Image (tube, rainbow, N blue to C red; front, side):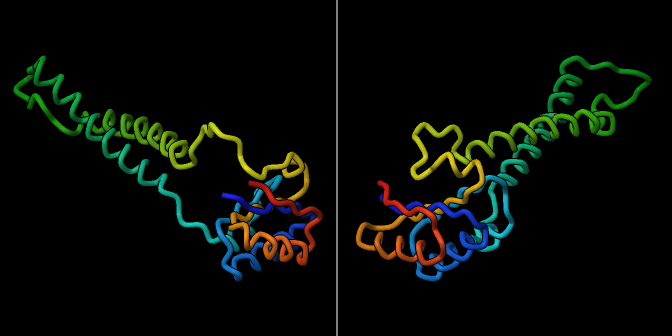
Length: 166
């Protein structure tokens, strides 16, 4: 979808431009910054990440697998010592915990890549190398009939450069 990209030199100007765009109910916004800034987090109000669900599911699966594998091994090759139970949960807790941490962390990494859609096979629209150096970029996804209004709003809030892209 086409949109408008603006380059800002000042953080406050970019934040106020994003606030104004949100107030005018423009489309999807993407902000490019050289370093993370909490001001944009507050203005954009993004939903919470779903990565923690991947961690929970991976942890539960890992703990279950950690217990199951030792129960299976103990029942397949029983080692009867002094009349004790062949399967006991206490000695398997350490292995269950370790496998829970391993599978949970791998699921977290996979969930992070899946939710952030990494790797991106297409180029990011609107990115400018200046946004890694010291400028702030605001990409506004908008229809062609509202592109002029978005560009004017961005210029009014102090954008150094505003251009339309597709």
